Each structure stands twice: as structure tokens, then as C-alpha cells.
Image 1 (cartoon, rainbow, N blue to C red):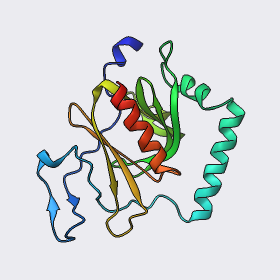
Image 2: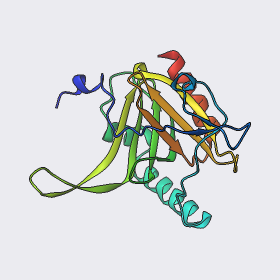
Image 3: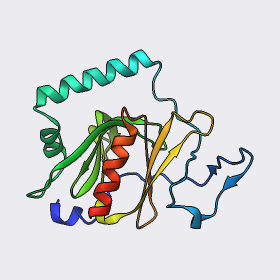
Length: 195
């Protein structure tokens, strides 16, 4: 597998959403594709990602301990993704990636070249030969392939915030349950504007 070939592609399972709740009226829906890629203050219903706040905090503390054991965020980034010379991580955030199979916990890396997500735990898949394999769920989006990044929030629970990334080929990636949502989104905007 050639690394240079992969850097021009978006890798991952895209999620396409068709309905958005509008803040002004809870009975109205936006389905017009021309309204995408603005910065709406709305979102579809929240995905429940943890059994309770205590379990969520324990999980984040365990993740922090593992990051320290490995030697920091930059080393984890280099371990899971191809990194060109001079590329550096601007921000790493623990969050969930929304998938058709449900939310997947992991780290979202915003670098000077790409946005990348890697799951906390490996997932089980079946190979074409029928073998059971364990792999990390990864998404790589080169910054030059990002059409826009949107902020969203749950209409009924405004503290539940979402980050949507839309690629130039209209794939949508939804990230949620950030520890510091505003800071992560600020770094994403900065990276995309400098690409």
C-alpha cells in the first residue's frame, strides 16, 4: 500500500444525514442540500454514548494514562497514521465518531495536513476469506479535501454539541461528545483555513 496514493483520498465509512432540525421551529426540517456547509446551530437527535457520567470519566482517565505510557499524542499519531516531514499535531481530542453501527470512541487528531480519527479499541471484522481480524477503526481526511466544517447542537439539549466535516465529494463525518468542543472546533477551523 503506497502512502502517497492514500494521502489524496478520504478513508473511512462516511455517514450521510438527510434531516436536520431547525432551532426556530421544532416542527420544521431542512432537507435542501444548498443549505449544507453553513454553520447551523442545530443537529439531529443525540446519540447516547455512555451508560453514565462516571463511566465516561473513567474511560477518559484510562485513555489519558495510556497516552502518557506511549509517550504522548504525537507518538500515537505517528504510530497509526503516515506522517510527512514537518507535519505536526495541532490538537488531539477524545470524542466519538458517529457510524451506522453506532458511535465509536477514539481520538480525533487535527494536524497541519489532515484530520484523522482512530478508535480507542480494535474492532472485529471478517476478511473476504472468512477469517476474523481485529483492526482499529480509522478515518483520514486530508485538509484539502474538506469542503466545510459545521457546528451543531441538540435542539432540546444545547450542551450536546456535534462537529460535522463535509468533504468535497459530499461525504459527512459526525463527531460528538468532546471534552472541550469549542477548542477542538477552533483548531479545526484554523487548520482548514490554512490548508
